[in-house]
Image 1 (tube, rainbow, N blue to C red):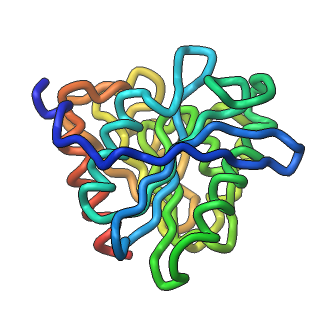
Image 2 (cartoon, rainbow, N blue to C red; image 1 turned 60 degrees about the horizontal axis):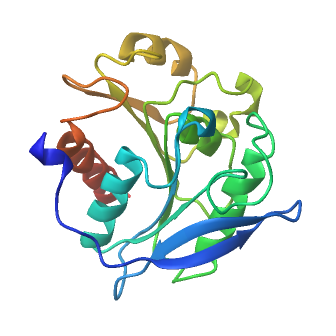
Amino acid sequence: MTDDFGPTAPTPTATTLATADGLSLEAQWAVPAGPRNRVVIAHPHPQYGGNMHSLVVSILFTHLVNSGCAVLRFNFRGVGGSEGEHDFGEGEQLDVRAAVEAVAAVGEEQCPLVLAGWSFGADMALTCDAPELAGWFLVAPPLRVVNADRFRAATDPRPKWLAVPERDQFNPPDEARSTVADWTNAEIHPIGGADHFLVGRTDKLNELIDDYLAEL
């Protein structure tokens, strides 16, 4: 599992996000000089221990910052130092939007802004179709946290890559393909040998997000 423990990213800066319904969310932000991309990462399910320091979020955060991207990760409402309570995928949509707006205000417009998420965070990312976004990178999305009509990204023409573990316990590649068959500009990218938690396979995930950003 050594591929889960790569270089250490520059020390992130603590910050807060303000949601449309008046909550303050805990976040961390790292901005290298002259970033090539901007990325927001949303974490897995709060009721199952998910937070902005969860494995896949931390791996992506470190890799992207070391690759020259400006990256923001945050805790959903009710997690860590974030105000409020878990809202079963409703208020969390405002949390994602607050994160996107904060990152959109930093950097140049020609620096693409990507919304990424793992598991619960991936489903929450799909609810956001903010105009500032260049696209979505979704890791092991269950595609069931909220009703399908909340996935605003589904009909959006901007590119969506779904990194789906080959042995995902909740939504394996064949099921994911069926769900997104009528989506616009969505691609399924299986992660061989991985389950939902991607332990020991995060190197493959890093390679895939690099490919996605290169296509932007």
